[in-house]
Amino acid sequence: MIEVSVANEATDELARAFAHLIPQLSVSPPPDRQALAEIIASPSNTILLARDRSNGGEIVGTLTLVTFRIPTNVRAWIEDAVVDSKARGRGVGQALTAEAIRIARSRGARNIDLTSRRSREAARRMYERMGFAPRETSLFRYSVREAKKAD
Image 1 (cartoon, one colour):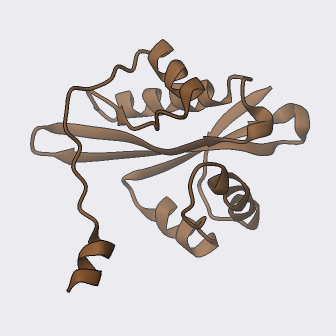
Image 2 (tube, rainbow, N blue to C red; image 1 turned 30 degrees about the horizontal axis):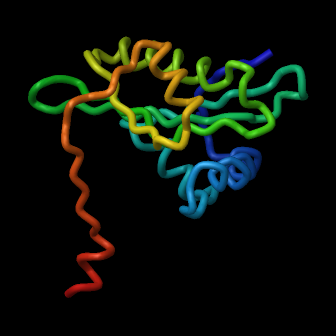
């Protein structure tokens, strides 16, 4: 059984879970306990945890919901959603996403945005089943790191 909850404090268990999960998502280094504390302390961030209650409550997935007010509305973004490879196909991502949608709606968001790499086909299918649709937009990125090197 999968249970989704909000991370309210940065613990050693949480840091270990991120150290295990983030490499399955990105080449970026996972956040340490201090960084997790900063993320949790930000009122714009909500870290959701999926625990496998049939396996001692092990953290098997996480998702970060970012909500913030801008002049035109409340924005919501799903970031860094990752499910442990051993737990995929069991509804973990769907449970995390459903809770993120519930929270974003309760905070007044009209839309929820996310990005998903083309290579993550199962995740993309799940998002589409849950009602997410590709958006007609041009996403631009400014690389602060690359700009700094050029200075």
